[in-house]
Image (cartoon, rainbow, N blue to C red; front, side, top):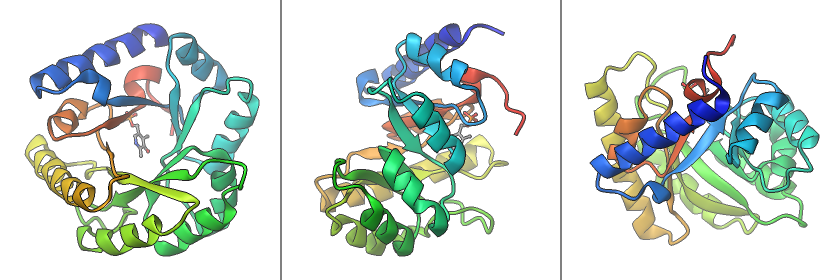
Length: 229
Ligand SMILES: *Cc1c(COP(=O)(O)O)cnc(C)c1O
């Protein structure tokens, strides 16, 4: 396998190419390196290669890594995994962004538990765009109500939407899902000036996500290699 620095470089090139193809600026797309299950050394390698945004899925792992890497104080931590209400405090205290808010209870707890010493927590609403039974996320029709709740919390900052298309979806299905997200996003943007972020696109569909307006892509495998879990 190539080094993490080389893989990162390839992903950056892919983002630039996808941005040009979509007549967008590559600088409008933030790359989040999804380091879940990967060791601290992998994050340090990516950091040395200039990467600053990292995504984690599991609360305890996220907290441990943020604490071990405290001296790298310009790392931006994104919590992107499913969030149970009994784990919100740790996330409110550690993360800079949460991509997976999908109910009022979670939003309320994150707001209550965000330390006063920290800036507002950046929040994305996860949308269950393919109406999967097993997937977290709100139905598209419920985005408005949750957005309105989040926007009223001074400790939270509503930044936009996140989605993970169904795992088995072919590219036509993904296109439909990304297009639907783009529509929901522009509707939300017209209502809230703080909304500027559409988080979608992973290792195997980042080009399509960028074509449909993604401003953050969450890439694990293409940077760090395959995961055991
Ligand atoms: C694991 C994960 C990713 C990264 O997936 P890859 O296919 O490895 O790029 C992105 N987003 C979420 C929510 C994930 O759980």
